[in-house]
Image (cartoon, rainbow, N blue to C red):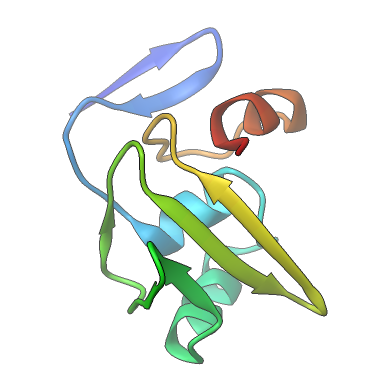
Length: 94
């Protein structure tokens, strides 16, 4: 299930795939790049490597190697569609 708000599409279920969430908060340009990063071991949730199908939950800390930059974010909301950059910063900030 999902709802659409002024900020975009927010999941009302307790599960969103990590590759979809990484794409929605614009850490990766495409969902397939996010999935490839997960499969290559470049994404960790709470310190553990994850597969692209793993579900994320609010409060979890995600580390992703994007190019040569390691980004660390904390999940505040579950998103299933890409939002504008300002909203992404507000819901995935550490």
